[in-house]
Amino acid sequence: MGLLRWNIIVPVMGCVCVSHGVQAKKRVVESKPNIVIILADDLGFGDISAYGENGIRTPNIDRIAREGIRFCNGYAASSTSTPSRYSLLTGRYPWREGAQVLNGNAPLLIREGLPTLPRMLQAAGYVTGVVGKWHLGLGNGDVDWNGEIAPGAREVGFDYSFITAATNDRVPTVYVENGKVVGLDPEDPIEVSYTRNFPGEPTGKSNPELLKFLPSHGHDQAITNGISRIGFMKGGKAACWVDETMGETFLAKAFEFVKQHKDQPFFLYYALHQPHVPRVPNPRFAGKSSMGARGDVILEADWCVGEFLKLLDSLALSENTIVIFSSDNGPVLDDGYQDGAIEKLGKHKPAGPFRSGKYSSYDGGTHVAFLLRWQGHVRPGSSDALVSQLDLYASLAALLGQPDETADGENVLKALLGKSGRGRKELLLEATGENVILRRGNWIYIPPMVHEGYWVPPMESGRMEVPQLFNVKKDAGQQENVADRHPVRVRKMDAALRQIRGIQ
Ligand code: NG6
Ligand code: CA
Image (cartoon, rainbow, N blue to C red; front, side, top):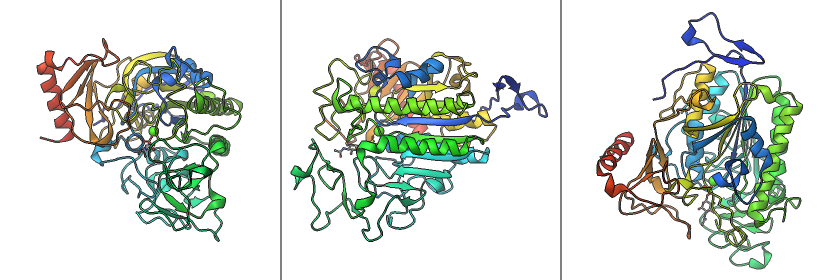
């Protein structure tokens, strides 16, 4: 799929740069723009002010929207992180791999030899880097955190990496730079387990008096930086991250990467950890929103984005850099800690007009903010084209004249660059536990589902024993299930879904 090649004439640095040695249809961009993907973690469509009325202002993220294209039908591939990130980097649907939320000691999910977005960009002459949340597994299942950690980001195609292994609520709570734990004292080696505690180590459950705040569900195991996590850990005290400075630590590494590579084409995957739990803002942002810690860390994320954009300005890179901003999945309020996210929400609607959020089969799970800026090349505006993070690999490959080796990506470059209002015709979306749904045009079909998967009350999972069909043009909030009124459409969409998934 995705082999529909469309090479464009893109004005670069004020001129029209095309390769004249080949036929018109083979023309490709000669000068390679830098590419930056900024991916937030659990940020809702309604959490940024560029998408309309809400309880928080995000002027820096809004700047990308104002100077670029604001996509109103942009999607993550899944309503949780690992599957979503898997698709972003591979252009493959996550259910092909059975991708689920990974623990910190899980092996690398992306199989050796599988084509990836960063590999494609390396082949196109880019230097590639990832800074932030990884969550795609590391090693082969028996990681020694005290030695060389491989395979990992390098094997997937990143020349440089500064990452957390999983989520900021999972052990090991250390940064890994180019396959090595940062700041590790060899006298205090790290051990990690997701099944049993290490003798003598306090946990959130047994020692709540050591905690800065309490968990609400799960998250009562190892304690680091006064916060209880998922999983057990021993040692590595000097290497443990400080949650309060994680935002600026990632920002500093993103800065270093850009400064170091400003004179060559670069790709940076800048994977913010905000506003995933635990939500621990830098003291400069604590109390700055009216929404408690969740609002504060969104303000912090917005500041990080603003500083990053200013860096591009100061290096005169803004015109030659494509900046894409999105989130790995939709929003969640209580995701395991008592941080006031529900109590302090006020009138704010994290998912905007969409129903439910993270983990859900409803649109709030995957329908996320999706912005693209390419100053001087892409005319600012708004687009209703259906686009997915799944398509970035195929589309950027088309931009650079590289082959699209993805299984499921589509070349939606015209839509991404604002030259067409049409994107995909249909798109599969995944909630937890491989519950897969189909969006076709303005219709969303959710098949009857039984799979348990993850669940976090009090949100709506969207799983029902009956088929659900919504016309999201008329009913963005998916309030009216019209499956009974459209049996033929239900049958056809069900058959299409099964056919793409290869199931009876
Ligand atoms: C869940 C965690 C949740 C979060 C999620 C992954 C519990 C009860 N919940 O298992 O807190 O870590 O995994 O989030 O442990 S994601 O954004 O990376 O997909
Ligand atoms: Ca997430």
